[in-house]
Amino acid sequence: MIELSAILVLGIFSQWFAWKAKIPSIVPLILTGLIAGPIWELISPDNQKFIDGDQLFQGGYLFDFISLSVGLILFEGGLTLKIGEVRNLGRVIRNLIIIGGMVSILGAGAAAVMLTGFSWKLGILFGAIIMVTGPTVIGPILRNVRAKSNVAAILKWEGILIDPIGAITAILIFEYIVVLADGESYLNIFLAFGLKVLTGVIVGYGFAQFISVLIKRNLIPDYLKNVVILSIVILAYTIADVFQSESGLLAVTLMGIILANKKIRYIEEILSFKADVVTILVSILFIILSSRIDLVDIQSLGWGGLGVLLIIILVVRPIGVFVSAGRQLSLNEKLFVSWIGPRGIVAAGVASVFSLRLEGLDMEFFDAEVVRKILPLTFSVILGTVIIEGFSARWVAKVLGVHHPKAYGIIFLGANEATRKLAKLIQGLGVSVILSDINKKSLEEATKMGLPVYYPNILSEFGLDEFDFGKFGQLWAITPNTEVNLHACKVLEEEFGDNKTFRIRSRLESRVSEEELPETLLFNGMVDFYSLVDLVRKNEEIREIKIDSKDHFKMLLEDKEYSRVPLFLLNEEKKVWPVSSSLKRVEKGDRLFYLVR
Image (cartoon, rainbow, N blue to C red; front, side, top):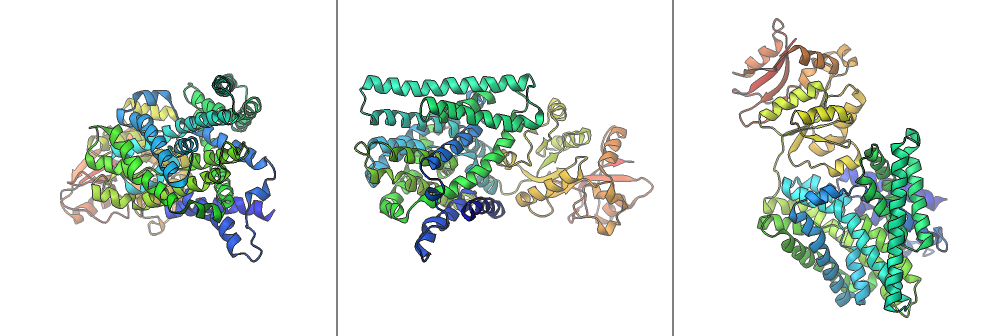
């Protein structure tokens, strides 16, 4: 009971710590698992692990739990892969996935063969396992670095797309090895291999169509949609795996990809729910898996494990990037993309499933000592790439000149009538803007006006991981829901810093004295959401006046006769700041934009 509770509590605490420290969650999760597992065994009087996955899940249950968890993770990854995006991607990203992926498989595989005693079959399998990067590790690094838009886009989309593609590649290679291990003739090998692939494709396609019909015909109530779909995914995985072992992983990955490319409502809601489920599974999975590693297995890697890690970072990744990028990136941009290639949860989960499965095969075909090296070697690559690249990324970006020193663009939370008018004006002044809203009709209106929009919800974990913060340094939360505005400011204050997140005043705050109001209320706290919308409708245009001095600015705000509602200042450097109590810098030549009551 204590161990089960500890896994969940320590996992969620590790996720919270990662958010607080602004580091990928993989780092504290793996370290927590190692401390609770092999390190605890070393220091405890009875030489027992505090958390031991093999003791918690007897027999084949551990393998089943890991396999099913990885299946759900891959399904969620498949939901992010849209064929249209692959088709329209730049050549660099496409090459990174195809050519760079092949370089990773062959290069990492060769390093494992030469330095750790892997056979070529296991080496190629290891290369396929660690070819994936993943948005869960790329996202936090990019948010911390604020890389240039083109570089950030390449790394972000590579991470999103290579997750399911890399997983499918690893699964297919593994299936080939499994049927080869049975000593069948080559004809039987290809038939068995083809049968596993066919089973995965048929089950994945069939259940994807089934889910599509259920949603389109409204056969599931809204409050049950997410849990019913989760159950169907588990059912599809189980059926495929019963007919042909390991085909379940392929089936659920294809299910996600097929659903992502159908015009189905609720896909974003499904993705958001699955992201929450995956967060819990990742927390549990990493602690269990890293706790299973024995210090003997880590020591068995020796200097060869470090050599494999360095070859992957310093040789394999750069070759893949330079071959893929051609002339479309500058030298410094290529060097930065080469440096950022951290491995994530899919690599860990797939490696765990495959290592457990291989341990059950005929050991005359595989050396048992070598098979046990797959998991610790994969975890060392994950931990090493995340720590080395993650903590040095900001410094490397500055040295290479591929980062945004400061960003002043504005994220508008809310795409209502008022924010659309404000955003359109500010966009025309040369400042980057983007609107985020859960109301699709409002976003459609914004798109018609030529304004950039962001969907899904930027406040969700998935939304934050996928958003490119490179151009943006402020949040203006202007929705009728005060709780949402407050939450948005709190979440993005971690991203932007103090006095960079602003919100509209609530109606209740109209009864509060000026001294008690927060400093970061938009428009000097003079209007709430509904008053602002009314003012925007009454004023055909937003007016402006040039500031002569600080006293002049103060006089304009205090002019009761004209009754101005100040909106924002534009300085001579084309930077916009909202008028609020936190506004400290006002200079001659600034332009004040305002509405008249």
